[in-house]
Length: 557
Image 1: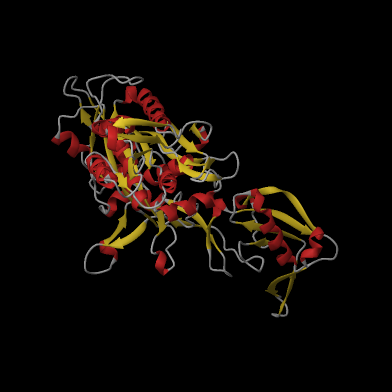
Image 2: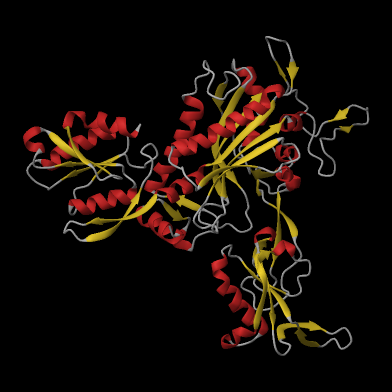
């Protein structure tokens, strides 16, 4: 599937729009249209229903060490700034950035790729100029070898590299055979000398700055005066709201460890280079669980949540080779993690064989609760360092509050370990869109074969569950169809359409991902039955009008 086709469909049918499009848009922000908002809401509701609402805390689930409870929170986007200092985000939540002095564009250091190229024949003269130390006059810089960069991650776009190389060596396209490529496309991180590097979109060599850290948190101010004293941050994740409310949840409910706290909400990251549609954006929504358990059973709980979350995606239609569960290697783990696994999907905008992260399941140990209880992460020494005050007592950088847990049955007190399944609602929505997009050949109303675009969503997350059509706009068919439509709308999203040939109406609903279409026809007037059409199989069958709602409800549940 070509990504351009999906992007076009998303705008045409109202799944996704560029934010502020009439003003030229704003990079890294997207609006969900009428169909998109229903799709994303269904995904979030399916997650909440499966993880929280329908959870049975009286039964040991398959693979779980014991029974457990689940509850929820909805925390504020803006929190006390010290939360981010203690969590490590203020000091460590960074990407490495390089800038181009010519184009004024910024790039993530680890996402630039390119190839070395040399020019045969006479020594080429570059288009850059440097000052001679002796004469203080500008003179052409000569070079024989240039590293040409591209923002693309796909090797099929090597033509862009060739055009850039011809520009760098100032030679004509017909003399492209003078270029000698040295090896495959490699990461910019492998380059130590930037003087002979041609940046993306640049016309001169050596215009990139040295890499530097860039903090990803978006700043704001709370209060009438803009000053450092009232500086705040839009949260980069929803997890910290759960950690700082751990004691509140324990004290205000009868919940006992092991238990999980779930939250769905917006997060913000000032990405250097948002890209790949909604995959990497500056405003996004997370679906996170912080699961608190005894240290002795934490490893088994990690395995339980890793497998359960993978199964959730599979059950909703992300099955097959495009979905995988990948355990992190030891050198990938955070210093506080004893295990992390990523659920990944092979998005069509990635190179062949590469996967993008959908969700991370991390064994975080007791790092987070201890951070907020005792102190902050010191980037120069791990684990936590507790600073002593003048009186010799600990000078807490954290809250100083006791966030340990006492088991009222065994009287044991301990700092719980945390398992964190953290999913992106937007990435999940994008993955389901990519997986659903299908093209096949079907006859139109005149029997001519045409390409049919169909979004094969799992019925549970489909934006519209059923569409109702009168075959013609007469003989009482529209009245019957409207009554059926109103009955369906009381249970789930439905759509009524009486415009155009019925074949075209079917095609429109196929593109919207509607799993079932109901047609009122001439036979309905005689035996009170209607035709139901299945989106994927195109199978049709007749059902009595009085049974339509329950028939659809059974199939989309």
